[in-house]
Length: 391
Image (cartoon, rainbow, N blue to C red; front, side, top):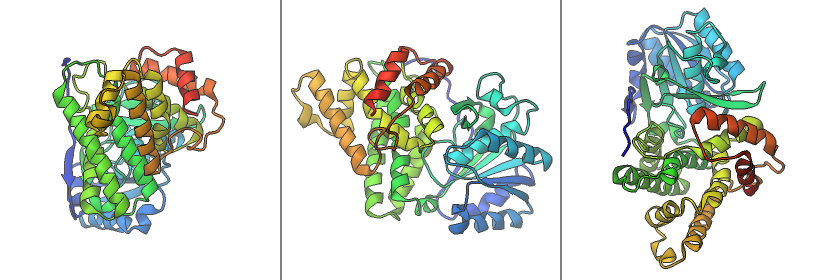
């Protein structure tokens, strides 16, 4: 196990009927709040009224900022930062999924910065101050409700980059599984794969010969996501399954799973961010479309990890027992691809609606992310080959 530092400053409030305390909790950080959300879904579900009621009861002055897109955009975040500054906001309340929370973090940082917000995402500036963020999660997938990252798309350059700082980690996260009952099955599947990919990135790239705590955490949580998704597909209002997905979504990408794991990187995110930047597809769908291609390309170098995945997570021990390493890996990848397809996720780029990808542009952006994230071992031709395999 490698040296590591783990810090998770977010207070988590989990369960039924917890939003009644949102107003009281918000007062701990201020009485002027900017409420950030997406489009019409929180109004249609009644969540908007519930949020406003508890804030009014606690004498919180609220201005709202709506219109966050599934891939949040820099121009919208900039305008949100200006709005927060103009109203002298003391706290940002994010009501929505990872996109809303990501943009809220960017707004929180931008409201305390006189320069170009994009500076934080291109490593030209470091976040030194940010308004406190309170997250009300409605679409568990990204762990944005408890992690230190914000991902934004610059539509002028079609680049999707991230910024990190403990200062933008939400101070409080409200996780009520009942808020997820109305998520369509397609997007529940996308979100579930997003959660799984956060866990599996480090699992497949690990070079540790002995990491039973981290491996066990990943294996158990991925199995829980797979079984919970199956239960939700049979009953969209299965409270226990929705709760399990929500908790797994929070834990998957807060740094715990790959803390101290030697060699752990996130190549599939490096490959997917350009896809959702250029083609504006759902992040979880893009990950599902790229992951099997990456596994095929890296098969020989990560064969023991693929086999372990097949045995411990897909429970294919008897099916691959005695098979030559390459054939065993191919069998596992095929089984995993079938599972992805059965959930309703795309299993390649064409399934995701991308028939003729601009591979040079995707490679250029992935190369930039290689540098930002310290991912080594991929030439431009490697990256292009994976994108071609994903077709």
